[in-house]
Amino acid sequence: MLMLACATALASLTACGPDNSTGPAGGSSSASSNSPSSGASTGSQGKPNGIEKSSAKDIYGQATRANADAGSFREQATSSLVKSDLRISATECVGKVDKLQQGSFEIIRKSNDIWAKVDAKFSEMAKAHGGALPADKWLHGTTSNPLAKALSSYCHSEQFTSPAKAATELTTGQITTVNGASAVPVGRTAEGKSVTYYVATTGKPYLLKREIKGQDRLPSIVYSDFGKPVGASAPAGETVAFPSS
Image 1 (cartoon, helix red, strand yellow):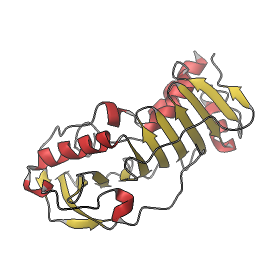
Image 2 (cartoon, helix red, strand yellow):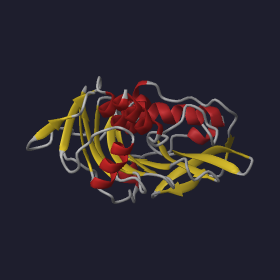
Image 3 (tube, helix red, strand yellow):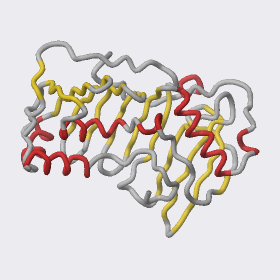
Image 4 (cartoon, helix red, strand yellow):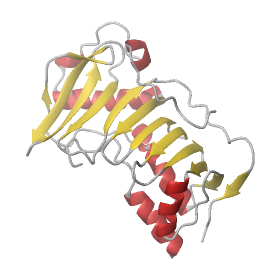
């Protein structure tokens, strides 16, 4: 029961990823911390795609579909609670999650196998919730292990298997530039909170960025390196098993 409670606590603290609604409420072991800086990095070079002529709802839907069809990408999320830098696909994930006030961990997922290495601060936080995650050691488990599954939930693989569709009305803004790429913004504002999605207007209509304002607990997210292999593999050296009870 303690282990289940710990897994539940960890899952409740996971970063909010790309939402299935458009409302504001709604093989290496880590990725580089450098932000994308060019159209090449975002995978959006090419001829104009005309996406800005579609309705705002269609723009959003086409963008999430394009990201899913890419097969993989880099996702960098930032909020007042967490920062993460992950390379992900439907079955792989490599990178690092920093929960700021609660410690950090590295994560690797390959199919059903999950490895994680937590720092001392995160280990203490897990212990306070009834878990026993030794610090600075690679832990191994599978998706059937509650703790391993809770940590890997940051990888948001559902973006590839169930790309989100707009659930609320959106409006379209003026074309702008995001990390060197031309993009059209679509989004909404309500009660002082706003969410804006920036979609590439050249090449594939990738979703390049989700920007949140007025709600700092939800992360703003930058996407890049579309189609680049994740290359997840088991960490070198000794591993220990995730606790199971």
